[in-house]
Image (cartoon, rainbow, N blue to C red):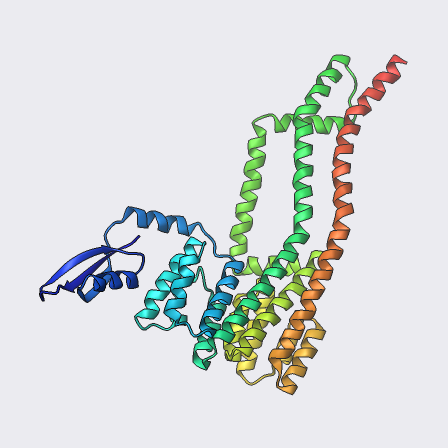
Length: 407
């Protein structure tokens, strides 16, 4: 636990400096007051604290998941709606929080709120736990006096985003697992099985077919130092790809190609539209200004091509343009989504229409995932069977020649 340094005045009226170990700043202040001291100044010690530093290092490797934030939002909304003070609610939730990074963030936020800082401003200090979307909606809830409603909307939004991500992951899980399995079988048979047959063929003096010779060459490479060169090449390509993707041009190029991929491109586009509509609708319904909402949605779109289209639309709207017309220009969003946004602008119910768009495209993503899985299953089975069959064929072709000679 952290150590705090306090300047206090004892019951006799004498001032002195005291160190106290407590779970939070509020707890340290309470403990000192319970002992009969008047707290004149209280701050956290800047000295080296081994356990605190160790905890901080451990927290840096912990990730706050969407589910963690959704559960926290739902619980805090319930407490606020029941009339529990924010500071007390944060204290209760920090005590029962199982994620160490989120727990420490809630303790710090509780201390800030107790000292007079707004909840949104204190959350902004912890970007690893609460992103710009979360903070902006909390700020809108504070200004409008509907914090509990906004927290419930946040919980619903995060739950929908998590469900959408799980659907996409489920589509990718099967080909990834089968691909790893196929690669493992290929490497295992090439490294351990082929050398046994190679020795037999060498003793018989059989002329090897091209396929068998190719696999024997692969086996020699995998069992020699050359495999290090191959691994280094793969790692180098991965590093080069990562560095290229970090650049603006690289990210835009790769994301544009991903939208044109067979099977996956349509899924990526629909999921991006669903995420945009759900997030934009939640922000608009919470009272966040349109331009601010578009800026937040741009940063959370997950695709640079979509982000560029949103940013171009934001600049045009800033000059007095319509949202639907501005989004239509880059031809990133489907025509149906554009028409529904246009109707929402005409009727003044843009937030409700965005939620309907999100519902529709999330259902489309779910159907696309099922279709993608049904297509990938036989393809991966054929790939796996083809790899094993190729190796077996390469091993038995020379044997047929041996049988012919013996005959």
